[in-house]
Image (tube, rainbow, N blue to C red; front, side, top):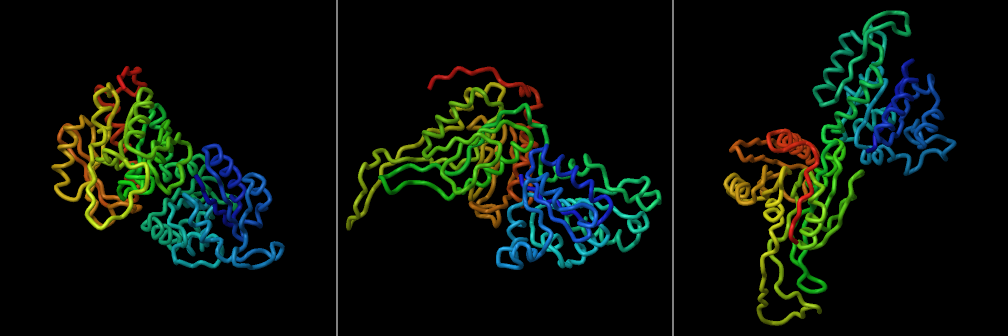
Length: 415
């Protein structure tokens, strides 16, 4: 995971070096951005040595770097697009004020406006500055926009006064970063298989049957589960997505290959999440040479592919099985029927015709259906957030009767 650390001017700037180390220990790649004021308290060289990366101090590049150029002029956009989170620690009253009012007069404040990643702010300043109505109004403005504020602590301040304003502890700031990234260890005892993407059934060497699945929901689930400490096996059909960090990936093309990959890994799994959009049919007799165009109609004889979810559910023992139902009508009825027929513990259903919930979107609108007849519906949200909601429920199912958090015993299967 990539984190941008913004350091603004204040005595507490030196503590940012400790924060870099803490985030690195938690597996983060840290990119440091310093304001002019921050450089009065600590040098960029310190952070460069700690991170092994260039420290950004100028909006348009320093003269020693050749001055302003196209690359430096758009660097804030590049950083904004590649980071998973922006944390600013310490954040001065001035930086907070500029963020609240949308002022972008340096790299850090411009980055704040340019990124869509979560933002964590840890203020540090004189107690009177912190308690001033203007600062409190600005902080509340940022909170209302979704910025996570790590409040300053009370204590003896560098100015000689005592009160609120001291930078929060490094552990508290790092904990806020991990929380906003969905990083925890609540699934560290889990080995989760996630299937993702489409499968392709070849008609001939150049044509195949498939669907519009991008794999984004399955990859989000794999990413979220890994961040929460799970051992993740991602079995993926063809996608254009980069493999998530920290997961074992098994690449497959057709349904039979995905079936085999699931079976090969199922005995060591505690849970299976079938997010892949598996092809339901395949050609009875794929051609070994390209089929030539003719003037008449062409008929294809198709046969059902293996039902992976139903097959593996027969030997699930104490594992949790989660299926997906991408529907265009009668979503609830279809999801409940699938829950029963597949012997799944939970079905994640969505209407793919709804805006923001169809294939290849970065958001989803899901409803979760359970065997006790209950359901949980969620508003549209980023797929990574939807993934965490699904994993929250999976963990609840694992803790319930019959689903020990211990690894299941090896299951003998006839293949």
